[in-house]
Length: 190
Image (tube, rainbow, N blue to C red; front, top):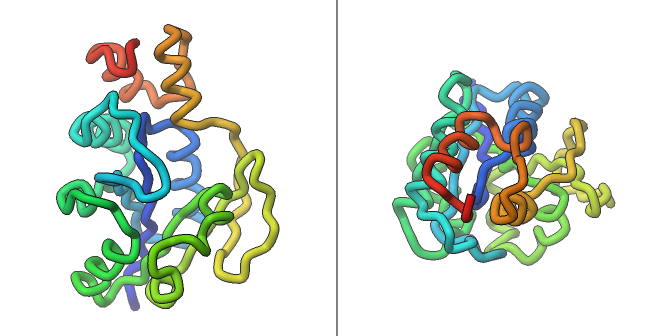
């Protein structure tokens, strides 16, 4: 029987509770063996704030997932550097782990732009997409994506960076250990 692994890609700038909720819901709904958090080196669909390094983003993730045995940090894209095309990443992973079925966990905003992804038709043959609704991006049906029902939380890293810059309280929105790290390191102007 093949191993079943979920991939949560993104900038995680910063990681927040919606990321963890999606990963946990996907883990249970898809009967996964593990979920890997895979921070981008340079995402093709957006820019990183420039306020944090890849090492700092990875450190925040490590702190959040340390107590969850089925959550892992995967440095594939950070170590490869350059544009983080999912096609390149999944090609690498499927060659490294031929006895694993990979599930790419994405939010509603990514589902809408799926057709624009680099080499998407080839990518769809290598991986299963699992998606979540996101406020502002209703489920319009996509035969290429397994939809997972779970809590829909209107939260984004962009909003959190703004709140941190304005010295607003982000307790409960960012997992406690990552939030403490952000405050201790003065990230995002906090």
